[in-house]
Image (cartoon, rainbow, N blue to C red; front, side, top):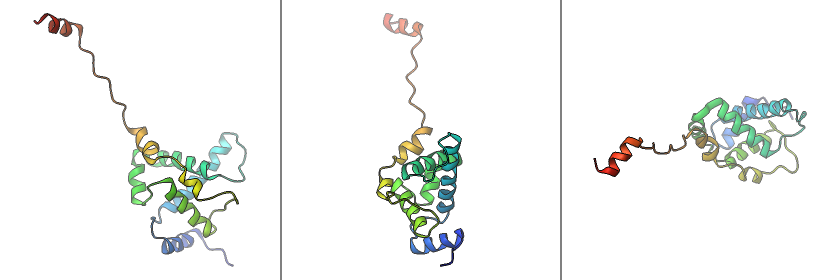
Length: 146
């Protein structure tokens, strides 16, 4: 069997499973590369395999780095709404031999990922500010009725 290139593999994936934009596939590949580099940088050694949980963490960090507060918009455009969607994308890539997997890797491991709102919206939502305290002079006037 002849190995096909990345772009052709993505075209075949999108033809078979049109749920997700073709643009998400290079992003996931780049997020995997980012995850591997981060593991090397953190002196975790050269990983022979990135687990689904490690990949999800890498995707989260990489997405925030690349898109900042626009992650929900970009992911929405790609029709990616949950970690389970990311799992389907990864397993589409595995089926086309773009990525590999261990026997223990399952799509179910992606379902147990993070909440998208907590991961991609909450970091950019300002914490509510406590109401400003009244200056003492106003408090005294209110108490004395002046």
